[in-house]
Image (tube, rainbow, N blue to C red):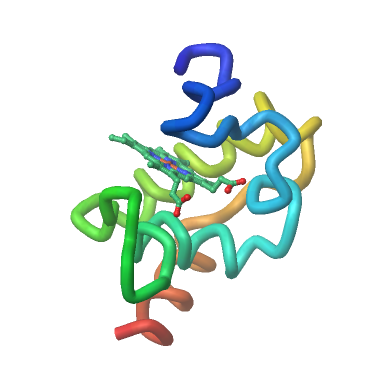
Length: 84
Ligand code: HEM
């Protein structure tokens, strides 16, 4: 939701999520694939451009991750190549 705290029992919050604060490649991969696993509970966002993914993740890290580093379009492009 707007405050990044999710919907209990349905959508985990992004505030303080280890995914938001953690490794940037893992976070990019999560958004592009919807969560990596064979059973994916989140939509995949691979239809977004590299810049759009970088923007939404940079925003999420500032807003919900206590300001851990921004993510660039170039980083997104690199991860996209790896998971193809
Ligand atoms: C585009 C912006 C989005 C970002 C950056 C994002 C990011 C994330 C992250 C980091 C997680 C893992 C959270 C954790 O386990 O700590 C997650 C999980 C999840 N997200 Fe999103 N999400 C986005 C949009 C959405 C939307 C639009 C939906 C629903 C329509 C959604 C549904 C879910 C669900 C159901 C999970 C749990 C998946 C599972 O437990 O395997 N997300 N999201």
